[in-house]
Amino acid sequence: GLHQHYVKLHKNEKTRESIKLIGKLQFNQFVIFVKSVSRSTALFKSLAERGFPAIEIHHEIPKEKRLARYKEFQEFETHILVATNLFGLGIDIERANIVLNYDMPEDTDTYLHRVARAGRLGTKGLAITYVANESDAAILNEIQSRFAVKITEMPDEIDADTQVTFIDIESRFTGP
Image (cartoon, rainbow, N blue to C red; front, top):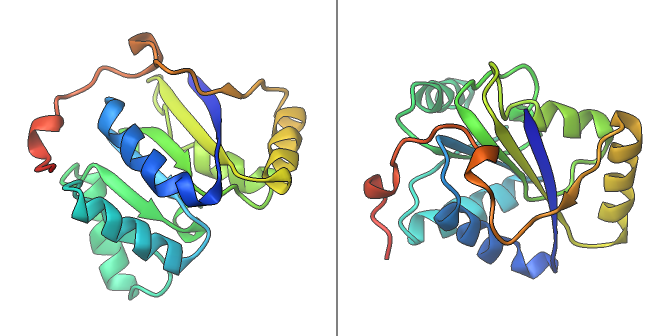
């Protein structure tokens, strides 16, 4: 099943919190959705600077390159993907067990398309959504109402039972 949580924070804390989550959560693949190309590039660079190899996919990258990056992620050569909504529709990544809404989706359909990437094929998944303002909170409430789900505040510790069986990818990171 899919476990859904939110994290309340200021917008200037999102990158730091994302790096903290990547460092603390065990995952097979981690997908981070952002709302713009500039946001994607900034987060991608921040991750790389801290030794977390990632790829980014957005509409300003030529289609052939996007497809090559998607294939790289799908074939498990990379474990962290930063993407805009362009990536959210119709893309299947069965090993992604964590989806992070770095930026709140603009509507409930977009939320569904994003989080449906986590916990596929009977595995367990985790969806985390950042709530940075009243507008984000209103959309979160709409999501809970429309899909009849309770999205709870992110606990300090995530029970291993809420995540899939992991591979040890920490040793692959060349962190600081």
